[in-house]
Amino acid sequence: MPSVAYEQAVAIYSELLNAWNRQDADAFAALFAPEAQVTGFDGSQMTGPAGIAAELGAIFAQHRTAAYVAKVREARSLDATVTLLRAVAGMIPPGASALNPAVNAIQTLVLTTGQSSSRPQIVHFQNTPAAFHGRPHLVEAMTAELTRVHEAGLVVARD
Image (cartoon, rainbow, N blue to C red; front, side, top):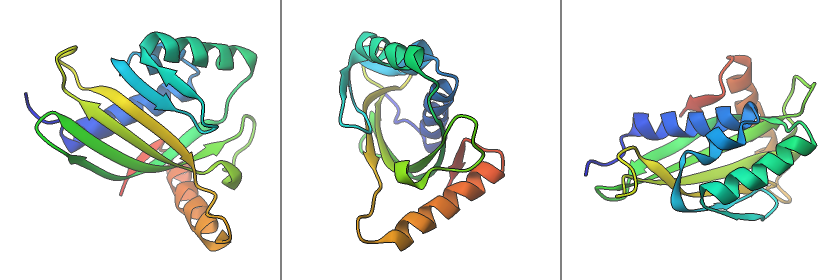
C-alpha cells in the first residue's frame, strides 16, 4: 500500500481540527482507525471511534470549546504504510479574538493506510501542553507564530 503523502496527512489533520472547531464529535471520530488511541490535553484517554465520539459528544454538549489554530512542523513517512505528523497548536476561547497562551500544545498524529480502510486513518493522536516551564520566551514565540496563522485566516498552516 502507498504511504500517506505529506499533503494527505496535512489534509486529514486539517479535517480533524475543523471537526473539533465545529464541535462535530462524529466527524472527528470518523478519522480514526478502529484500534486508535487518543491522549487528550488533560491526559484523558480515548479508544476507537465510538469511544472518541462518545467522550467528545459529552464535552461538546456541556460547553462550547475553544477553537484550534495550528502549524504543521513535520509530516513524514515512517514506512510504506505509516506517517507521522507533528504540529504546534493554540486555542482561541469562545467569544475571544486572541489565542490563550496557557493552552498552547504540541500535537502528534500517527496515520496508517492499514487494512481496515482504503483511506488513511489516525491510529494515535497526542495533545500535549506546551507550557515550557521556566521559559516564557518560548511560550511567547509560539503564541506569536500561531497568532500569525490565525490572522491569516487559517486553521492549519504549513511550516
